[in-house]
Length: 60
Image (cartoon, rainbow, N blue to C red; front, top):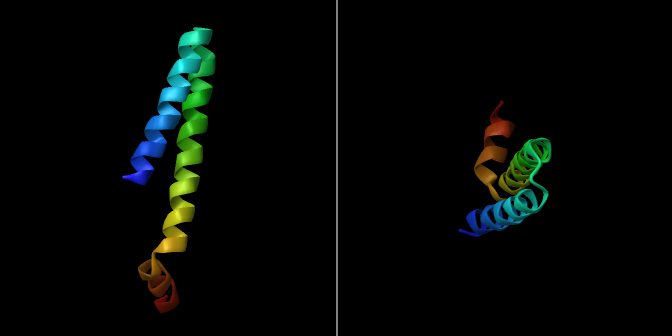
């Protein structure tokens, strides 16, 4: 739930920026930036919170 709300807040802010600027290139860059940041954030959170993945790494 928390991850979803964070994504929606980011999406809303980016959409607001797009509507104010009306620039296709800026929209593309912002979307790529948002995707990268969310991927990094979720990956970091998963590595921190999930001990299952750590066990998997220890096995190999």
